[in-house]
Amino acid sequence: MSVIQVVSLAIIQGLAELLPVSSSAHVVVAEKLMGLDPSAPALTLLLVLLHTGTMVAVIVYFWRDWRRSYFSSVDTFVRFGVLVVIATGLTGAIGELVAHVLRKVFLGSNPHADVEDLFGHLELIAPALFAVGILIIVSYFLERRIAKAEALTVRQSVVIGLVQGLSLPFRGFSRSGATISVAMLAGVEKAAAEAFSFALAVVLTPPVVVREALRLEKDGASLSATAMRSAVGLDILGGVLAFGAGLLALKWISVWLERGRWYYFGGYCMVAAVAVALLHHAGY
Image (cartoon, rainbow, N blue to C red; front, top):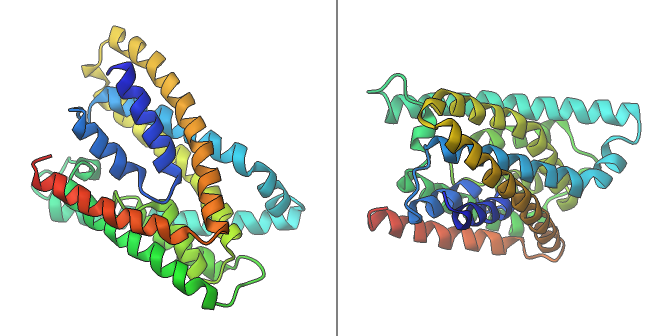
């Protein structure tokens, strides 16, 4: 990969990973337009570094709020930990169940295939993008009519975890867009919904990075030692750029949530879904 390709993918990943617009949809489309193979080992290595960069951005951006909201006392921290465990456990269970169904339906002829083999299919990404766009718009118009809970409840964490589980195998169904929207519909204040959604993202990112690293190890035989050393330097640059873009994206999403512009993201997702569908029709 060239420096321009790495820089472009890093900025796209850093912004779209944290904005409610689906990073996977944007990255897959960018890779296809650049003529890159999303399953190539070099891109898998880059993805690991980009995810790491955005995770660090989330921690830096939210640390002060988390410390005040979740770490103010032992009881508060324990309660927060229980809610995170519930949501993350359901995410894993639903994600694996849906991935198993997708493998059976779309990859049944190849028992050794991974659900990741479907991630580059634009015909699947487009409807997922459109669906999350509708969810974001609905949440914007309905959340003001819903009574707000004083604190996040177990029921709310269950709902958030279930929806987050759907976002893992369905690329294009934005994780942050879905979880924040559903949290607001469940009666969580906007700021609290945002903070909890990204706390779950930090918990979820290390297993995702490990999974990608294992894929890299499995495919690593096709990447020479020289190519690996060359890729690492560029990918570290990509991780740093993803960190910076991630901070910008987090500020962006916070401002638009606060100023009542959340539905703009939904409109964008629906337009992007049409664009992805047209690209698929054009042969990408």
